[in-house]
Image 1 (cartoon, helix red, strand yellow):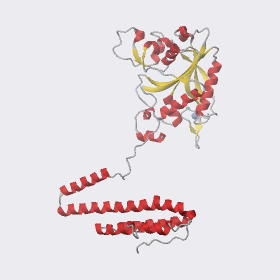
Image 2: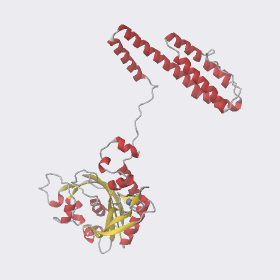
Image 3: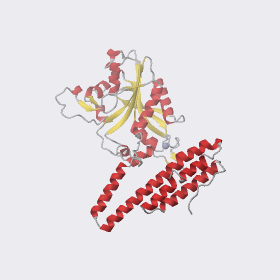
Length: 394
Ligand SMILES: [Zn+2]
């Protein structure tokens, strides 16, 4: 039975919803029954004719008849919901029966060329249909390593540190010599360096290499800025490590340096303890154990209490061994120490007299921290660019 527009007496939200649902359902049934051009014209006139079409009746019976208090709501329903749906449904049905007619003709004639022409016509009209929805471009998300790096940098920025950076291709002088790695010193062997080819003609300290740590930026910054300074240095570094689950020839470091008069190891511990609580949560504890780096004296490795098992060494309902902390309850996070006076000697002329200033430095791997934080088992996943992996962090 054909749909007739009811006169509305009840203008409550529920009644309006019921009335428009009935109308849309009738629209669906009537459009799908349309099989040819003649049917379609009848459908169009029945719904859209200015005189007595369904939309005109809606306007008269629903909108004009609405009490003042409901006019605004009925107006929105009719103009923003009902009219666009009716127009779209009727137009789409016309496209559909036209397409079916073209295909029928082509099949009846048995002509591939006609089918091709029809397809080309369809493609052309599709290409020109400005009412089609656009092609969605995925927005993407920040890479987990860069997000980790940014979050750590932000912790130090809140403490008054500014961000410094420098070249990835460095000279031997900045990467090693000025950081108290003398030529032929065995400590150089601990950093498998990638050297730029064809540098043999240059004096050793001018030869180029890919920086093995972000520490050269400490020297470059001290050459430009007089003390006091507080800087944090995020950046990529390279070492001749074959890629595996925990190594990569390219990875990301974050270093920090603070220099002033009377900076002590207590400042170092307080700053880093605060930073770790900001980043991992206020319940983590820190622990410092003696270590060695050429550019700091004394030097330490800093551990944080395992933020995965809470320091117990075991996790989950089945009390499984905690792998990230190797059941020790502690995770090594960074290296640090008081700046070696020998390093200040290289920038002494810019106000860094080791008898007058002192400072501390620290460095950590952003990739390793991101692995721990997001529970990723294989470092290579960060660099393979697989969208399915990366989408998990969106
Ligand atoms: Zn643990």
